[in-house]
Image (cartoon, rainbow, N blue to C red):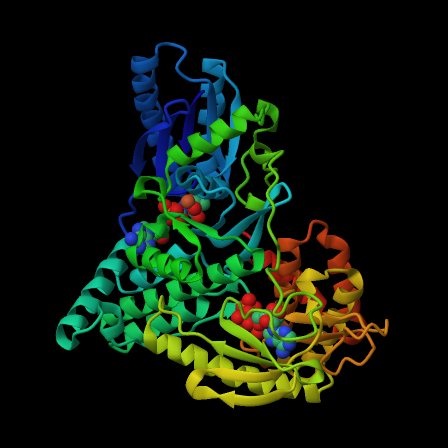
Length: 575
Ligand SMILES: C[C@@H](O)[C@H](NC(=O)OP(=O)(O)OC[C@H]1O[C@@H](n2cnc3c(N)ncnc32)[C@H](O)[C@@H]1O)C(=O)O
Ligand SMILES: Nc1ncnc2c1ncn2[C@@H]1O[C@H](COP(=O)(O)OP(=O)(O)OP(=O)(O)O)[C@@H](O)[C@H]1O
Ligand SMILES: [Fe+2]
């Protein structure tokens, strides 16, 4: 099968021919380059209307020269997300070409294409995908016929966040490659002056680092970098520090996603994925946890029609074509709306939530240590004296200064909030010891298993009540996933409950490292969003679990928080 793809969601007018048999891709692109500022939607659309027919013509001519008059079996196009005026031009071009050639039309989700090109080129079976593009930033994982959004930006896309800074200092669009070059320069100078590994030797500027579960935010860092530039801080140093913070955040949430889903493959996509430092951090992170990492070559990373044609061919082969009447474009097309027809019938087995600290139901501590996304956890002792030694290990992918700060701050926060939550009536482990020098906590062993391994409505309803109580006491958890709740069914007199549970069913919140004090409805709503996200990412039928969770929250908590949750959930969606 040969598919002609058309891309034009924002800046890149592109056409491609994918020959599935030879697995070869010809791409012809014509970028729009704004004279000043960022992308102007109207100018971008004008560019599309001129450039799309030209790139299509070039590809079609090449295709017919090589394969003759019936060179194309289907026409695939980017349906969204993207800028409405641009998408409409692409849609019109694709419909008319499919009509002229008398071949089927395939409507491709641009973000899923960024993911699938990585899967295609790597040969990975079931990777987690980090899409790091201009207008977006999210983690996707396949579960039960859909790509679920495991985590995403709560405000700007990662490229846009970087471009915002370069616009502020008057550099032309796109800013990403310029920031990369300036950061490299800064690191090289520092390493020449001070010796040692280049990134480690360079002096980091302290910037906001905002991760909530697997979601993240760039708005704080954007204002901080702009302020630093206004105050006269060396621009190369800002570029370097911006990259170190933003990419460490992306690497951290990617590691969480691998840990939560049990996946051992990561693919990277999107324009920002052309950045060497981002690729390096992800490769180092994956290597440390024994996962495979892959980023396709640059021509498949930035917006391009090659990825549209490749996914278009898979969709066409699965019979997933569009009648013209139903082929409207969608500027807000979410990746999790797409039925993944081309993977139907695949049985992808994975252990969601990973393993247990000591294996489910074990009552002694001889079982192996386990490694979460952040820490190693070892269990010692027996019976009611079981303890957990949790050490936040150094992450060599991130700058050593940032690494030290994060591990120290989170260890302090975890010790403090675990105890305060307990005093506020939220069951948590007792904290026996804190060693800041090694970022190590000694905690009471609680619960029988992670909620992830025992997901049901009874438990999620309880988690709702516990979080509501925590919020009422002026705290948030910061990372309330199904892996950070421990449950003990109790009540059966089977001797399996533990850690002060007695024989009553109980849920414990653990892992307060991202917690803090706050009375803001917004922060409370974000906690709920993170919990629901972890359920959506892993449960086959999330809705009843989420309904029970919200009912539990509602019975104790402030009703405003649930209202705000709807806004928060919409905020990550593409505009
Ligand atoms: C919806 C669609 O239109 C949109 N496309 C898009 O954002 O273009 P993309 O090619 O994936 O990414 C462009 C972004 O990628 C950044 N970029 C390019 N090279 C870079 C580099 N070496 N380092 C960092 N960022 C880079 C640019 O600064 C720009 O913000 C998207 O995928 O979100
Ligand atoms: N106090 C405890 N009692 C019982 N089990 C625990 C306790 N603390 C941690 N565990 C077990 O160890 C796992 C990892 O612990 P924790 O979540 O604190 O570390 P982490 O590295 O931050 O993990 P992740 O980032 O994956 O959430 C938990 O999911 C749980 O199974
Ligand atoms: Fe893109």
